[in-house]
Image (cartoon, rainbow, N blue to C red):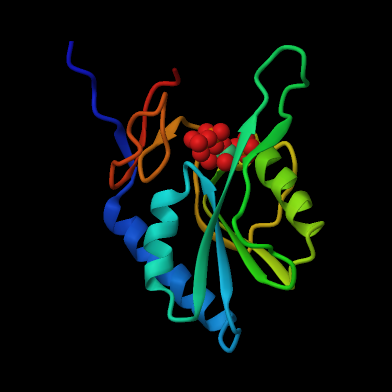
Length: 176
Ligand code: PRP
């Protein structure tokens, strides 16, 4: 049986337009800074980071971190753990976390606490999508792409069972 294509929620043009605007703002805000570390949260942020990083006009470098939610019954729901760490130390660096989505906020909350303890010179966040209806922990978002309703979104890095990540738009599918 042929599967249905995701319903378009944010078009490719709208994403590209927003990414360009975010890149201009970030480039302006960090003007004069020696180097900005763009810290992508794998795996969902890889496409957003790729597009954003190429449009910045300031000196920058790229690093990655990967987090995973505990899913076993023995740990509390919502607990997060680090599964891949950065390559270069963050102490004294200007760090901009690049995330695809803030859903409950638990992942970003954990990440910011972890990174803050490492003594960065500055720590900010750039998030493509936020879903306010699902938020459990309030997290600071310095640069935001879009606010979206509580739907299961895929594409532009986001997956459903590891599918749809490479769609150029944000679409909606039925939850798995
Ligand atoms: C997604 C997304 C965020 C997190 C947000 O990652 O990339 O990191 O969930 O959810 P939260 O606000 O409820 O914590 P996911 O665990 O799906 O992994 P992936 O990025 O590898 O797909």
